[in-house]
Image 1 (tube, one colour):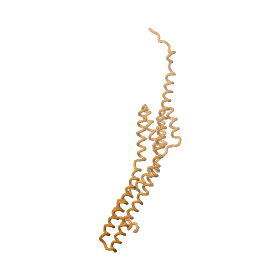
Image 2 (tube, one colour):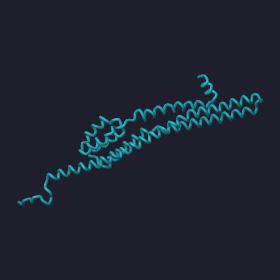
Image 3 (cartoon, one colour):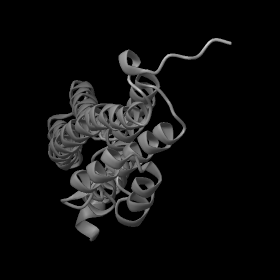
Length: 237
């Protein structure tokens, strides 16, 4: 441990910003892992099929109840809940699409909102390491010009040590951040792609099956009356 502190101390003043960004990187790596892997829930395999059964019958309240029981904490469940509430209230197709898109945007934002910080933190850590390298080299060569040969060797070695320590510490902070960013970005793209596709399918299901259900209901209502061409003539007084 003492060797680590000595290594840190010899890196110069820019080691402290790099340390701060290193702590942020660790915090964001843990937070993104929890969000993208631990908290991420997937709807049941037969979720869409079951929802289709309720939509075909026009029973949106039952569909809402099913979502609360099986997929309440999933992103697709939240999007479908919005659709069920709108259809229960008699909302049209344009309102359905707009509200589902809004909920989809909120869900996508929850997955992607902090992943980009990892790349930024990694790049800034590298730059601080480079800055420590430059200042270390400047101080070593600036002091060597007016020093004796014995002192010159000491100044050069200390300055180069500071430069290399800052570079190494910056890279140690940056490499895990950039690797984690690549992994989490790929995970985010997979989740967002699947969610967008599922939401689109659910939206079209609501359009198609709701229209079919309305057509069947209208047909039943018309069938209970007389066809127009065979309607009996009304007697005039």
